[in-house]
Length: 297
Image (cartoon, rainbow, N blue to C red; front, side):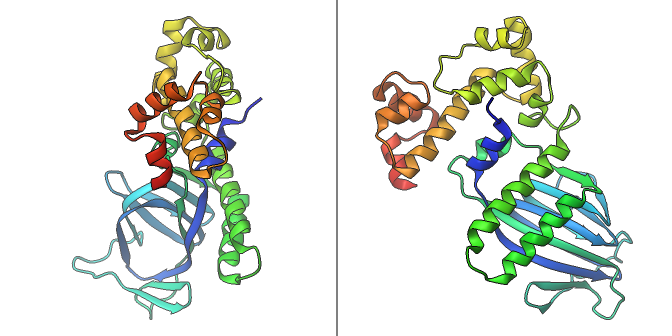
């Protein structure tokens, strides 16, 4: 059977861009805005607050790991609120090592922080299928993976980029495993945790070229058409047909960028009977023709 989670992460193509070791002491805060990129943090020692725009503060303790697939504004701060008017203090004491807060105060927090990027050509669709925030506690494997990524980032050894790409894929998959379940936000993980919807999702991913109808997917889930439609939309966050079309187009974008096969083969691979039918569907969905997209990418 197909593994939708592995396919999503593989198509996203996460790649580390920044990795740093951060220590902090006293009453401190630091703010980042308009990043729009995935952010992760592993707390090695101490305790701090992470506040993402529009959300309540999250208390992070030693052993906690947090991953935000798309983040645009956030603040990290000491648990003890800094006095009014306190300015952010950030000092790079060694390459990739930063000190926050009063440099003369005892170090109370140590964290490994990283930013990465998605190289995928359909980042918006793919990342929308992931939870908004992943917060794991006491998962030593995640802490070890972050350490390995940080060590590789500063090591400068041969095959560095390949190893970093693989490590980050494993980090994402492990973090997503921890976030699975009915309590996660609507998306792929929540759908896969539903015993009725999981077979339908796997069927979509197993063969996107098949003529999969809502009736067929409902039968796979042992549900009526209407019940399946409503449950899928509630748990996954989009209607079944929208999910299927989005997944086909994500595959098409990846194949177009690779430029390894003609248009008719791409069309057949994702379930269109002719190159012209695929051309029309792609243009309607993406807003440009397949040729224009491939050249721009």
